[in-house]
Image 1 (cartoon, rainbow, N blue to C red):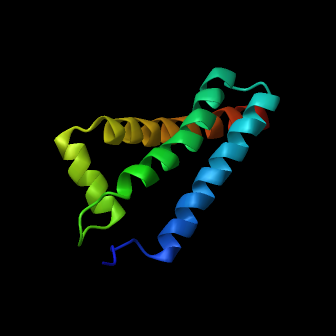
Image 2 (image 1 turned 180 degrees about the vertical axis):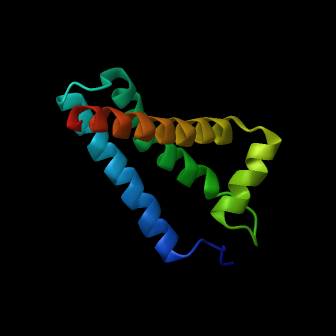
Image 3 (image 1 turned 90 degrees about the vertical axis):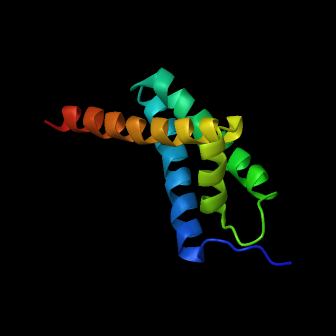
Length: 106
């Protein structure tokens, strides 16, 4: 029984973004910029992929991780709601991080 999975290029990009987010969050804390939000970003960037991974193990045959995630989100499972909140938070944090970084330049 072989489970479907997303292509390697997707996973490389996914983990690159998460590692970059983790590094930028740590950088932001040391620079004393949006510290509380950066701590939450670090927590999300560490916990979301772990929760996503462990809950994707039990997916049905013929489903890749994304299809399983969407299915679980439609069913309202707690892990999928936490994961989507984490992803949205990380995107919002990146916007704030980039805006705060530009303020210092100009």
